[in-house]
Length: 273
Image 1 (cartoon, rainbow, N blue to C red):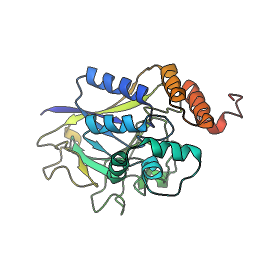
Image 2: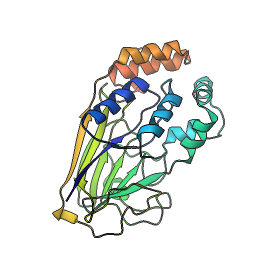
Image 3: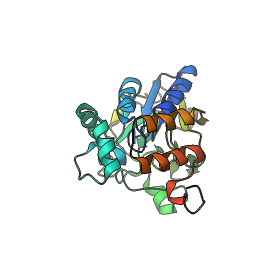
Image 4: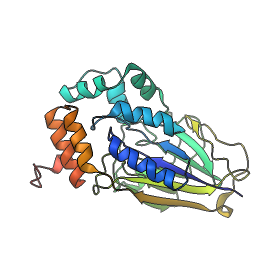
């Protein structure tokens, strides 16, 4: 029974310096399979470069709320929104908006569902201190995920705070953020490890489709989740942001977030600005 390792990255947010550091760490571990859980763009200055790197290195990507916000054709909401959208090419925007909302795979006989925020849509946020009802909901199929079986494992991003919770409904994992971590300043990503082949082929399928029609290994097949933190040159990323003339208010808030790992909504309260 072969064991496969799959790296899951999320919430890059245009932070190319952090993304390159995380992808280098993944490669150094000999992991060749990478899946992106969305929010490739926005907040940071190099969304187009991060999009190109995602297309090169990730076998699948799901759509995040910032893909809808930046790559979609909705109304422009301020200077920063216009700047982030203009930084992308037309091809970038078309590709980012067209990626699926969820991806399913089978690993160690478990149906693993990968999405950005929740199975409701890209915007319905589920925090770490979620309710029991929210926890159970994360594993259920919805119109957003498609006509698929209930998931055993769900890995998501969006909240920029990694955690794991196991319960009778399933295993819920948040991968944290590569480019804008908000529990501390160091990027995180997740490695899944499990069996492939007869006990669950680990091929990713868009739209929640089944990755295998074979038998499920269940408890007989080992399955692991590892969280990884990767240091990177924060000041180099901040310098790039200023060199590229991102709007000043966003640049300053982004710089404080990168240095402290504190959400910008709390900067004034904590005396960080």
